Image 1 (tube, helix red, strand yellow):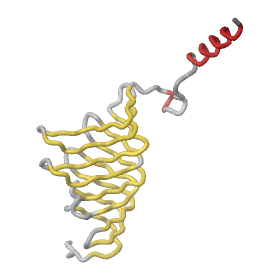
Image 2 (cartoon, helix red, strand yellow):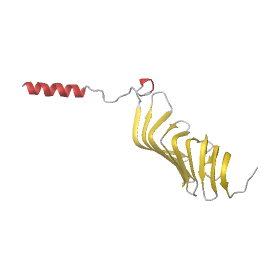
Image 3 (cartoon, one colour):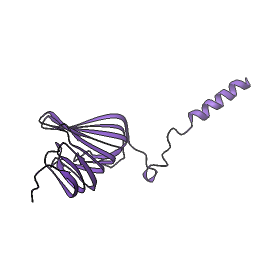
Image 4 (cartoon, one colour):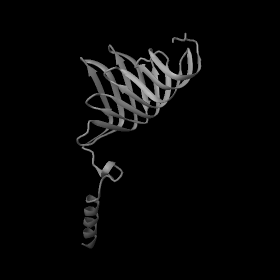
Length: 174
């Protein structure tokens, strides 16, 4: 009988144990939504504009921002065709504007052979532009450039880099 009592007491304590440690969350707040291995598809007029793959997403009450941790990938589309993608350690997606911030070890790769590395990128959905104010490295068939402040379309065909250093075979336009 005593063994049964101990088993019941152990089960009771296990059942009453806190399941998550929320002490590291902002202000000790508990998220109202938590998603693992999520895929978010952003569309406009029925056409896919981007697809966000996230390992872990947290959203807090009264917030439009979805916080992505543990890695993310964003695929960009135009007229139904894949243009490019970017990967990052973490990020933030505003579910009202669909603007995105990618943070940490950001790699941008276009289907045309453009690759860039930086530590953070902002995607503005309304203008379909990607930009960073951080240091950036750009590699393509024509370029090996380093600089700061970068603006581009999501296809990475029409881009500007400020304070460039490196080599390019492109014609310089003032």
